[in-house]
Image (cartoon, rainbow over all chains, first blue to last red; front, top):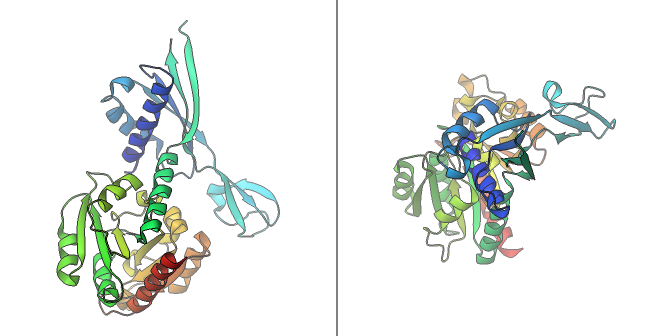
Length: 115
Length: 224
């Protein structure tokens, strides 16, 4: 259950962004969540509801998840492939010289404020 | 229709913690203190391993331990009684991991004067602690034989952030289908640089190698 810890980080950063922009209440926080980030979106949203409602600036604020599919790059055959079904091993040439291009994101994409 | 103002942020939630961790690391470097972040699942034998190891090195370097748990102080007391070194307990207040700020707060309660090595025993968990940089110089983890050799496949992030993997409880190898070669292979898949040392905290087998690794690391950190 690291989702709650992550929620506290989101709250801190969202509040910081609101203060910097002179905003009093945030209505939506949009997250980029990578497929292999180890964050479970359902748990994140449950924890969010519990924690965000305790913050006046975030009371009722919705957490939207923008999922990012995981994609790896193979250095040997210079190709991209879907990480989840194949892991570290390139399905095109069998090489293990691969690394994650995207899919590890746990980031705040944007915040939305109703005017 | 209601107008919605969108403020783009595009910032990792770990960015602040990474910054705090880097700051803590350079501060510790300045004070000549080496911080090791030791992780594992619950029941892998962290505390027993630490006791054996500390007793091998405590005459050569000065060691302190910070025990992080969600609750209780049994581990900190056990370490203090068995080794005589400074050992403090951190409570994470229900959180499943320590971040750099919590580590700093813990270090504020350690008398660091003259201390060469601080070992942070992180919360027993293979997922969350791997995501948060504590500010440690190195990450090490203990995997015990009963947990199985396929753990590196199941917890990829943990194994990719660890510089050292101790495979504990080798005395029970005959009773489990644990394949040490496979384990090394899987660890290498996650992190080709990681070193694997099989140990048995109960009998002391292999603990000397871990102790030597620690002494070399601390020496290197102080003189580089």
